[in-house]
Amino acid sequence: MEIPAALRTRLEHISDADDPRVAVYRDQKDQWLRARAEGGTGLHGGLFMAEGELVVRTLLRSRFEAVSALVAENRVRALADALAALPAHVPAYAASADVLEAIVGFDLHRGVLACGRVGRPLDAVSVVRRASVLVVAEELSNHDNLGSIFRSAAALVGPERAGVLLGPRCCDPLYRKCLRVSMGCALLVPFARVDPWPDALRAVRADGFTLIALTPDAGAVPIDEAARRAASSPRFKPALLVGAEGHGLSERALAASDLRVRIPIAPAVDSLNAAVAVAIALHRLAGVDGR
Image 1 (cartoon, rainbow, N blue to C red):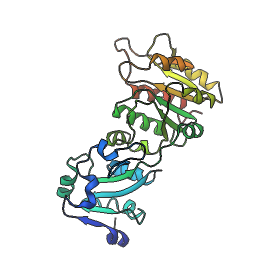
Image 2 (image 1 turned 90 degrees about the horizontal axis):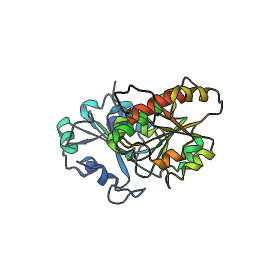
Image 3 (image 1 turned 180 degrees about the horizontal axis):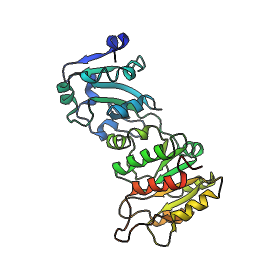
Image 4 (image 1 turned 30 degrees about the vertical axis):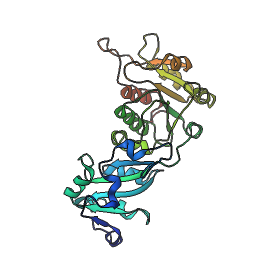
């Protein structure tokens, strides 16, 4: 692909890893980079990092603002269309592979990075009102699991129908590992934190959602039966409650649910991974080929 003349003009070349223009990319930890009290404090507060071509391209078409982009010189041609489409005030930097590695300090980005701004967080009311399917996570602190849940919600429901609600102790969907695992879907599926927990779930029920607790409890309704109930209800809107690995949902969250659902598994295993369970439940209860 030919590099557009406009991009050649605006592309800023970085030859020194200590160049202050790319300081935000230099060995940053998520906690320092974000330094966020919802909006951020400090020099680079309220920012997040997108890594890899797919995640960066997703950032550029998401609701989040891109602050800058940094790519390896040998990736500029492949990214020419995306870089050329950046708003005029957003700088695009290019560096050799060696300089890029000296700046970043690790090699998981495949030569493509962008910095985004957190911006004003969505509120739970707006996420609930626009969604027809919700995933509600309680104390889910594993970035791999949360990223996988966002990817499944986008793939099996669609970003325009899905929403994710996070309990107060859940990890951050915009941390770089979560974004990477989600393949950028955490930038597309709307999410919000809910508090107080679990009392705030009453508002979810009041909006017409059925609160479905995913649990391995033998007394829970098998998912096949839950799927039949869903198929017989034209206005069925599921809100899937999922807990952390190990202890699962709290008793308070289970008590707040309308229905407890289990996915039958072999007796040799006690439970499914949280993200796998959510994916199966989304496919059975709310998939794109269903209602």
